[in-house]
Length: 189
Image (cartoon, rainbow, N blue to C red; front, top):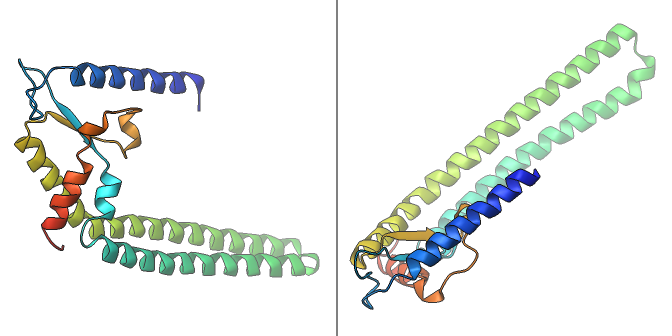
């Protein structure tokens, strides 16, 4: 990491922390509402909520199964390339310069096909994850939006997201258990 980007990250964390501390210091009326036009904040841990959402275990199991298939195909492609390289290494001494060039070109083509297929499978894995988790995430977002409106909260941070840069927060502002409870009470997928 470059020094200036690390410094910029710390500066951003400090700004976010000061903003949160400044916002959180605004007096409330005891019902998570701020007094005299201030802003109230809270936070959740979306990872914990997602893992406890009905339907997550099945989606996660399906995704893991799909990933094993993708990884198996990638492993097979690597083994085929390794075998072809090993065969070339054994035959290299006996090959003419033109035959060497031809074999090297074949190996490079094989490697490129393998890399392309690996990228395709990685893209497919991301798409599959979205297909499986999007309905759960939508349900979670709906519950969080409902709680935010119900309690008149202006901002809810996700402490599981590395971009939030929250390094400390008042545990009484944690809405994760409430969101988990409500998501679980809404039933299955």
